[in-house]
Length: 207
Image (tube, rainbow, N blue to C red; front, side):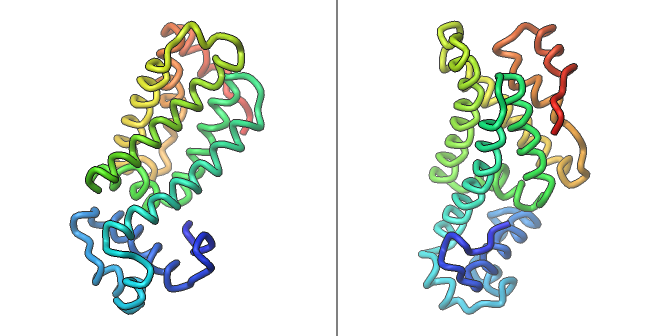
């Protein structure tokens, strides 16, 4: 969870971060304002204004921090394994652990950003592109990049994101439902035929 470490260990800013994540998770971004965040965080409006230009700046800045934490989990997990199959599964397990740790943070990262205007949609697209990078890396490392275009990775990443969004919105993360095999299938299907994609699910690496 956000702890203010990226911004000088400011405990008040950390409380603001926790408050907006909780409130957005409870009510959605449209129902939240700066005053309510300040009340939940038990900080003054003056301190909020010192930290952020406005509510949009607060949301976008903290979304960037949550996204950075997300990739700090997935990147090293994938890099620590060899082979495309194991890399995808390792990243998937890291993602599931991150989302399960804090369902409100999961909704903040994947759901609320879609209602944050143009800047929010740009951040959503960055997530999709990073997923595409991860999916594309395996074939490229194994000399198969020419067989699939960048568009293949982007299509797979977009489908993966949409599935995650649906699951998080439905509360599957809150209930600790296990949908990783289904997600892996969606991610690898554009690269493989349906039987090969199913075969990927039959060999789950230890995690």
